[in-house]
Image 1 (cartoon, rainbow, N blue to C red):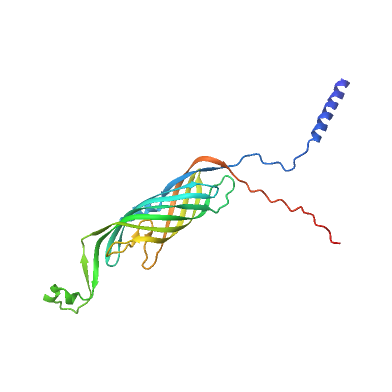
Image 2 (cartoon, one colour):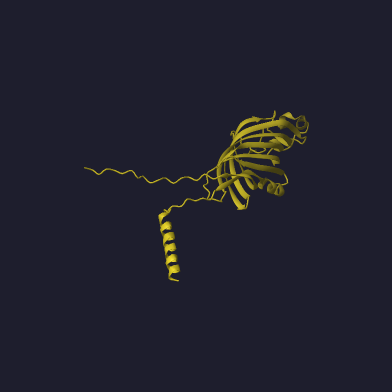
Length: 268
């Protein structure tokens, strides 16, 4: 019996000595491989169907998409169609057409591992092809009393004043187009797995604007209202998108800077 007890003590001593010879790693490395999903995100601009429901004079639809190119860069595009009727003081017109926007977004938000939210800035080149229909108009003529034969034969008994001359025959202007550059600032937040709610503000600058003879482009699909004497326009969108992961890439982890260990010599 004593022999077995002595053997057990010797065995434990050998194991203990061997375990103490192995160095203890006080800073173990993380061996879990971290990856990020890459793929395409597809969705719709929610504001346009909502406005189409609330306003009879407007119909519109916009499809949005982006593709993750690198850790922070995304290729982005928007494709849409709009039809809008507007009533101004002296005329009523309808604009109808399609537009395409191509560009890129840069994500400025630093996500924790496992998060994929975006606060992005970017730019677009946009092109729109459309038509304008002048539904009716009135010309403000201060000399109508003196020039119209009808009023020369039957002059009014009241004091001459300004009279609007009207036309109700629609006049259509086709093959119109415009192009512009667009600066974009927006956010995309992941509500559920791969489902994102987003919003963005856009400031556009018109580069080209083919206008009809005798009329102006007062509203351009994708650009919105054209302001008299200015090339700038403002737009926005609210998107609901689905991210379709296609593959994964290893996530690059920034190495922590090592402390400066350089020894300084004492002053003599």
